[in-house]
Length: 69
Image 1: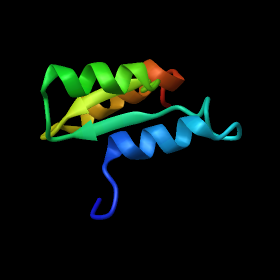
Image 2: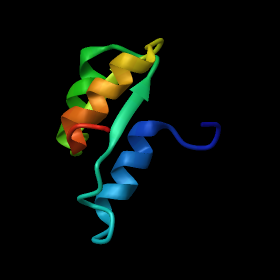
Image 3: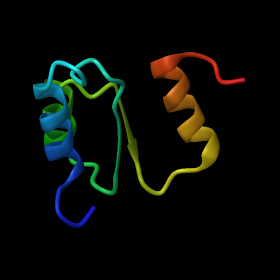
Image 4: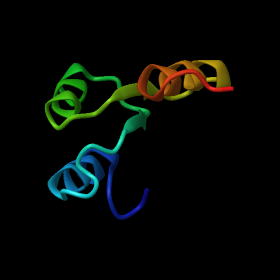
């Protein structure tokens, strides 16, 4: 994203009552522990580091919303 990063987007989403409980999976190229901790503190539901494959993404999604059919 050019204008906003994922962590900022997560913060904005969590501030609004209509979206604060919406599932949020962060996909990022950064793997530093501080960013992961910050994302968790703002309520990220799962976290995936790029590059990733379809099976890894499927597992992350299923961990948040349940089995995909």
